[in-house]
Length: 401
Ligand code: NDP
Ligand code: PMR
Image (cartoon, rainbow, N blue to C red; front, top):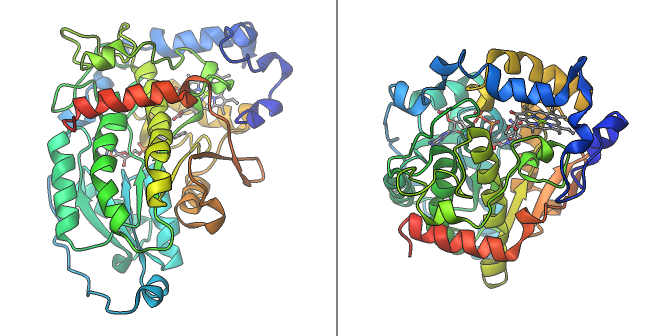
C-alpha cells in the first residue's frame, strides 16, 4: 500500500478508508496551522497574488519547434539471439527536459545500455538540460513532441519511425499541474490542458507506438505510464482536497471543451488541482486497460508507478511561492515522503530496465529503504469498468474511433 509514509505521520494524520471523508485530518495542525486551513490557504487566498504566474507556459514561452536530424542506425545483421545481447535498448521518455524524466534519462545513460530519445516540447531547454545533467552525446537524441497537440503527437510518431530505430520501451512521463488556474486553458484541439496533455496526449502516443513496441525484438518491451499517490484516494495524500474523482465521465464524454461541456472529467466546475489528479487516475487506468487488452497477446509489460514525492521539480512551477518554499521541508520532515530527483530517476530507470520489475499490470512504489513493491490502487483507479469507459471515450477524443 502507498500508506507507508502515513505510518510515519503523527496519529492525527491517519488515513481515511476508501470512500470515507477526509475528516480525520481536518482538525490536525501543520506548523501550528490547521491542515484544512493550510489546504484552503493554499488553493484560494493566494490565488490572486499569483494570477500573473498562471499564464500557460505553452502560450507565453516562445516554443522552439526544432526537429533533430536523426542518423539511421546500422541495420543489425546478427541472429535474433545474438542481437538481443548486442544492441542497446531504445527508450522514448516524454518530458525528459526536467525533473523525473531528466533524472531517468541520466540514470539510464550511465548504464551505457540505452539509446535515449528525449521527447520534449522545448528543444533548446532539453539540450541544455541534457548537457548540464552530464548525459553524454552518444546516449541521447532529442525529438520534438508537444503533448498538448494531437498533430504534434502524430508527427512525433512519424519522425520516430523515420529515424529507423526500434522502440523497446516507452515512458509516458510528461505532465503539467495548474493548481492556481482559475479558468481552464486548452490544448490545440480545445481539450482541457491538464487532462489533454497528461492523459489524452499520452493515450494517443502510446496507442500509436504500441505497433512499434510489438515489432521490437528486445528481450523486455515495456510501456510505462507515470501515476501518482495523489490520484489514489486510498492514501492520505489522495485525501487532500480536491480529491480525484472521475464521476460518470460526463465531461470527458462531452469533450472537455468548457463550452457545451464541462472542462472537468466529472462534469463539475473547473479546478486545476483536481484536473491534474483526475489525469493521473486516467494514466493509471490506461496502464491497466493496456495490460488487459494486450499483455497476453504481445508479451509487452505495462506498468505504472509512484516515484515518491519529488518536491523540488518543475511540476510545482505554477504554484504560489509560499507553497514552493514550504513543500520540500514539509515532505522531507513531516510526511517523510520526499525523494530527490536523482533517487526518483533511479526508481523509474528500474521500471524501465530491471529484470525483477518485468511484471505487467503493476503500480510500483518504494518503501523508505527504497525497495520496490507492488502497490494497491484506489477503488476508482483500479476499476476495470471505468478503465474501459475512459479508454473508449479517449479513443473518440483523439480520433482513433
Ligand atoms: P517537471 O515539471 O519537472 O517535468 C515535467 C516534464 O513534462 C517537463 O519536461 C515538461 O517540459 C514536460 N511537459 C509538460 N507539458 C508538455 C507538453 N505539452 N509536451 C511535452 N512535454 C511536456 O515535473 P516532474 O518531473 O515532477 O513530473 C514528471 C512526472 O512525474 C509527471 O507525470 C508527474 O505527474 C509525476 N509525478 C511527480 C511527482 C512529484 O512529486 N514531482 C510525484 C508523483 C508523480 P518543459 O521542460 O518544456 O516544461
Ligand atoms: Mg501532499 C503521506 C503524506 C503525503 C504524501 C506522501 C504527499 C505527497 N502528501 C502528503 C500529505 C499531505 N499533503 C498533507 C497532510 C497535506 C495537507 C497539509 C498535503 C498537502 C498537499 C498540497 C497542497 N500535498 C500536495 C499538495 C499539492 O499541491 C501537491 C499535489 O497535489 O500535486 C498534485 C501535493 C503532493 N503531495 C504529495 C505529492 C507526491 C504531491 C504532488 C505531486 C503529484 O501527485 O504528482
